[in-house]
Length: 276
Image: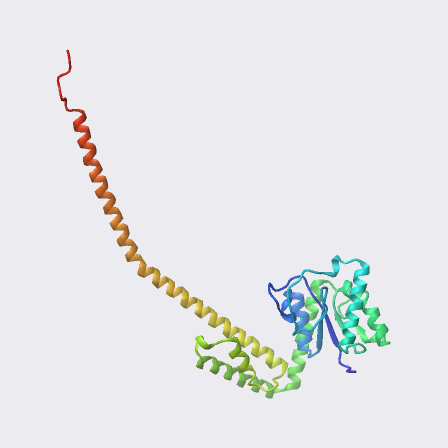
């Protein structure tokens, strides 16, 4: 059994609108900071889901509406027992556990974990008693410390490799046309790097997303420019049609005026003498 700790991170209410990897499904600032801490520390982590029990971060899952806050005591205890069953199936029972979750997620799960491992010191809750704001500050600080420690261990060589990868990435984007730039192309490009470190992979993904966002913005600007040009070209035609309509209206009004004057002349011209 591995001695490195397993992080258990609770789910949150705010979710993506469509199915995606579990690590990207939850959208709250708290969850993003908890995930960043686990990934920066290089730890294995699983997500405690009110609907699914345990989720692998890479597992695709659809958005759902379930929370332990609406479950009664018996339902929460049954949920904790199901989580333990899934952890056993994954071979994760007995290793050190760090729980980043609220009281409702911990209340029945911690006793089960301690009983299964036989050592209560293997389960830690580092943010016990902290408010949400304090938890987010604590998570952000721990993530920064973990990232700095890993960079210090990696040394300058890892940074040199990262800079070369960034240069390769920039050159690759410059050589391919936007018409053939697909997500599959991006995945194939990232696959060129043999087993990159997690830190480099995260930064490469950030750079990739940034480049894709710029390309999408460029495409939107091109579409907007095309629409403006089309509108400008259509303006003379609309102006000509408007002038023709005005001319037709003027001619119609002139004819109507002549007809009215003719009728008025007939009405006041005596056709015969009136009787005395």
